[in-house]
Image (cartoon, rainbow, N blue to C red; front, side, top):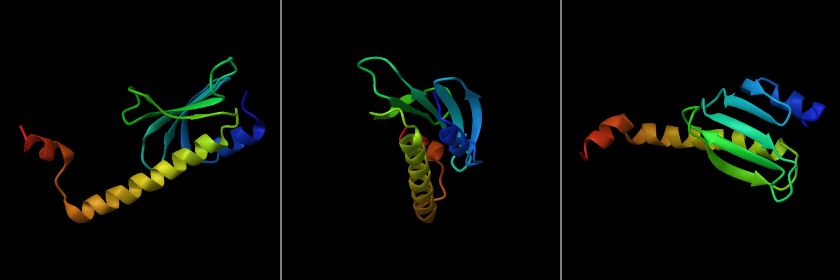
Length: 108
């Protein structure tokens, strides 16, 4: 269900491809190391593409739904998410060097 163009873009080196099936691809962003699933649907009532997101590669949530079966908006969303995460991390590193674990321990 993925076009040759989609396969070429997804395989360009920005992602580590973990699994590729006819209607889905599991990939990891090389920038942020988050795991994503781009799943195409061809069922009545379902969106054309669903983008799932995981921080740990096991627990996924629906990040976004797209009307059409074009996966390029999902790829763009992942790249935008990476830019956001890098910007957020840069700002956080200016504010503190204390880990989330240490900050959570401070309230308990």
